[in-house]
Image (tube, rainbow, N blue to C red; front, side):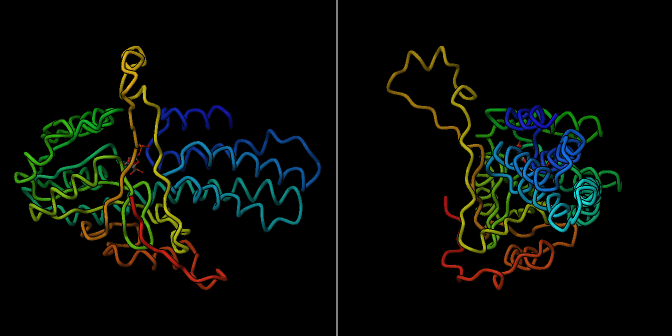
Amino acid sequence: MLVSTAEQIRQMEIRGAGRIARAAAGALADHVATVQTTELDVFVAEMERAADLLVSTRPTAVSLPNAVHMVMAGVRAAQTLEEARLGIITAATGFIASSEQAVQQIAAIGARHIRDGDVVMTHCNSEAALACILAAHQQGKEIEVYATEVRPRNQGLLTIRTLNDAGIRTSYIVDSAIRSFINEVDLVVVGADAISVNGAVVNKIGTAQMALAAHEARVNLVVAAETYKFAPLTILGNLIEIEERPAEEVLAASIASTLPYVRVRNPAFDVTPADYVDLIITEEGAIPPEMAYIIIRDHLGWSIEQFDRPAHRTDQKE
Ligand code: RI2
């Protein structure tokens, strides 16, 4: 179960920053029953190994290590093996429930920022971003959506299916058509895989181009993201690692093998600077990107005071 969940996350059969966080929490809870030992130390070591395996599957979405950290907190305070087992299960169940609730809260807040008659552009397949769009539609607002294809994994297909099933008029466009259509759009709504302390947003490759086009066209860009998508270690200047995925996702190996001078680059994410982000909608409320540190300090419990060296670099560069 643990290994298969890790593999499903790695292969993107389970994908989306929120979904992989919940899957990892669930896998840790399920793993508890499989650890056959009477020793607390042995149990903790095995759970830490399991946690490391899950975290290693995808490097960018900080929701994954944040969720694992929250679940593993259940073991750290334990004095006995029973407390440790229960601690993990309780923390995992709590995380999954609060994560699902967070999406609903984001939807309610995000829908307020979508007006009747708006044309919304979105990129990739974000549960949190789609929840805002669906909530606005359910409130009876007449909205229309432009959804991108999202090469190379085509997550846009998932998005247009959801929008279609909800009865929302949708235009499906290739990623390179963003700038051609941005002037027909009132608002951009996207999700996030990670948000840096300085408010830079890491999301599916192509988001930064969409943000640039929106900025140029004076179209607001809203990011829908649960508080556990904020990256605590960026306080220390740590940069968020951008996952580079296999070349075969972009170009078939049979073709690539005939092109010895060509190399394929396949970064899965890019960085949108805070300057191009108008609002971040979290379950705690809508904030400007400049308030990212407050979320990390007050809602994730990390602050600069707990580190013994000052932050030397807080920018998220590409
Ligand atoms: P939710 C996805 O990553 C997309 O980049 C999406 O915008 C982001 O996670 C957030 O998704 P991938 O797993 O958590 O497709 O809002 O690489 O669903």
